[in-house]
Image (cartoon, rainbow, N blue to C red; front, side, top):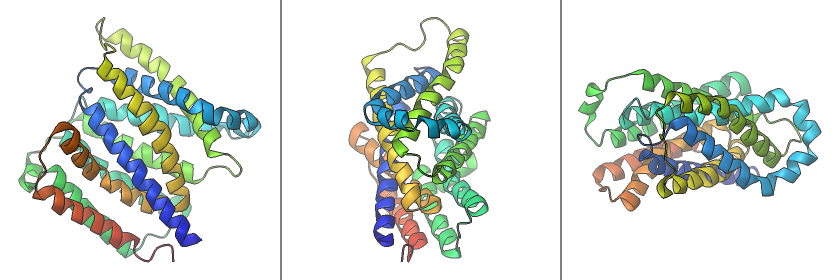
Length: 300
């Protein structure tokens, strides 16, 4: 049973990562044409509306439990909803895609470190070795096989925002792993989505005041992207990620997160017509091989 649960958890982590990779492809074209905080607010309003038919009844049934753990719920909402994705959207306006992809590799490292410190999860030498191999695959992919590009990188405030976002997502993931006993996942997601969206309202109002009039036109392209990231990258992916953390643990889920740039590259090739090269095959082999090495014999 334990092995079966671990396998299901790995599949859930893979599914969440695959959906989030589509989020990067969809939002890539919006970074320069739509205000980032407004995009985040529309995303989480959409997610809240989408989850209500499934989670409202559970949230109402467990309202006493939600009130009892209000501090936990608010922390989850502010970290995982209000701040994390919004910082990524803002960072995308101030740094290069290569920088963002490289800094995103810090997320599994944060997860392993925080899990070891606060959850007592054992991180073995095999896990570190597998993570290292996977990181090599990510670096090979984002540099497109030209490692000399690493010497040309220039760091800026956007990189700091991306690093902060990675840390906040890792902290949010640890919070999910420590979900209060008896609290239904659907009830928790409904509450965090709604509270997280509410937390973005003042930020979005300030952004609207600071930007020129007419900024952020709601075109069909924008509406389609908001629908995808609101339903797919929010409701579906967050539910799968929560299950992955429960069944496989933060360390393994974090390692599977390394497949995100690989899926992004494959989806960009299919949807945007970007070419596939030997780099994709080699980096894919390193990422998958690193994950296999790190997770070998787990769940036995």
